[in-house]
Amino acid sequence: MRHRKYILDPSDLQYKLVRLHWKQKLLRTFLWFAASLVVSVFYLTLFENSFGSPKERKLSEDIEKMKLQYSLLDRRYENAFKTMDYLKLSDEERFRPILNMDSLPESFRKPGYGGVDRYRDLEGLSNSSLIISTHQKLDNLNNMANVQEESFKTINEKSIEQKTEMDHMPWMSPVNPKYGLGDRFGFRQIHPVLGTPRMHWGQDFTVPYGTNIYATGDGTVIESGWNSGGFGNCIVVDHGYGLQTTYGHLSEIRVAKGTNVKRGDLIGISGSTGLSNGPHLHYQIEKFGQHVNPIYYFNRDLTNEQFNEMIQAFASKSKFR
Image 1: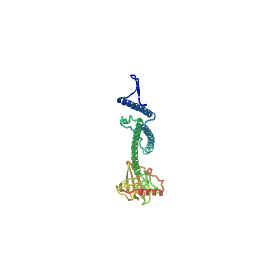
Image 2: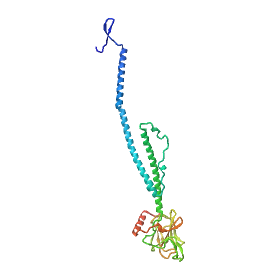
Image 3: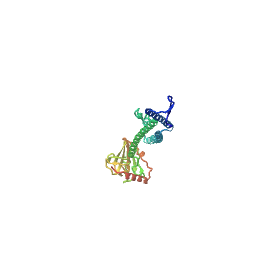
Image 4: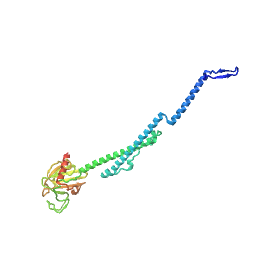
């Protein structure tokens, strides 16, 4: 009864039941559904604005995680930049000064990267400034690493070249330092054989007959045999870099012309051939064709045992080639 509606008919003063047309019923149902839908959307919107939808909450959480990851990545970049600064410091203040190399200009160490629109695709994204900043740091770090790699390659090549040069320098006594020095580099008033004033272009060693004579640096034998200039049995070694060493008055020659020798290789035996009044070694050095005093190219502070150990060490690593 409560769902029925009655109206008073004035014509006969009777209450009569109101019957709705089916179209009216359909309209009322539609209006009720529409009102319910509006109310539901209103409350759902209100809830989402206040608490957010599950999808939005998930997206928000993902964004926060991404920010955290970028923050951690940024710290790693900072550590990487510190490492690059350390490598640069070692490069500029250790390796290059030792190898007598020029410093790299700062403009070369921090090159740019091409493309004015390099980061166009990253613009307009959520947190695009953070993403672009990270990409810029990556590009800078990559450029610095490439420059440092090339610098270390150059340093390595230079160090190999310098080591090769050092190996070729005649920086060793040709005989054991236990033996004394004879006539020194300079002008002699009386030649021991000729008896006339004459320039002495080398350093003599007063070694007994049969003493081992060693190559004082890496090089190639360019003369091996009798020398008509007074040195008798003689060996000349070209060390490269403008340097040559001569070993004269030998009793035996142990290397042939064209032989590649290493520092410490046994190349001859002392004697008294040529213009000599007794067994000794005449040793001289030429640099770019000019005679230099050999005394500045070796030291005599080694003991007999130390010299022998050095020769053994050289012998274990070297062969005639």
